[in-house]
Amino acid sequence: MKNALPAFSTGLFLELSIDSKSIENLLMHPFKQAICEQKLGYYFAELLYNRKKNPEDIFLFNFDSENNKLYFAFVPNNFTTEYYTSFSEILKLFCYYKDSTTDYAVFASTLPAVYDAMKLDKKKCEMMHANSNSVDLATKWVEKYWSLANKKVFPSAENAMKIEGYFDKNFQEYYINFLDFMSDN
Image 1 (spheres, one colour):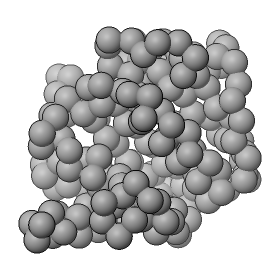
Image 2 (cartoon, one colour; image 1 turned 60 degrees about the horizontal axis):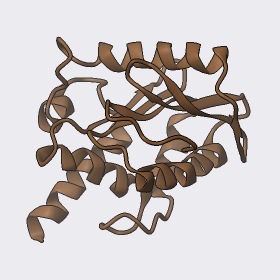
Image 3 (cartoon, one colour; image 1 turned 30 degrees about the vertical axis):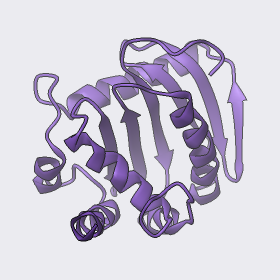
Image 4 (tube, helix red, strand yellow; image 1 turned 180 degrees about the vertical axis):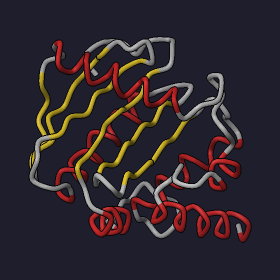
């Protein structure tokens, strides 16, 4: 991020054109930062699992199978430059697996205020200047973010898993396996 990270809730928001099989492949992609089997799906599962220690950290991986759209948001209590670096790399993976339409991602606050915007094309991810389009998208995605909460309170990971359609089913399997991994360690 070009600017200092703000003190209020900031994270990554995006909506991606992708089909279920591509999501499955995306989650299986090798990712060194995952503590379990070094796959991206387990890294995401770890982010959700970390809500047990930090309930303010919000991770959303919501797939609309009717429209082949993935809504993704990660808004931790403390969005560090390490997260920014990791997610800049993850966005490149999203570009590899997405369909051929152009999508966008924003690093933004929940106000929303846009700090960085990325254009996501098939196999190409590029930084762009925050503009009225990225602000409009951030506003839309922050509204979706709050729509998944009840009175601005998000369900626990365990309760969210019980809500039909809250998480992508491929991701749910990674989370369940991650819970098994954590109980064994």
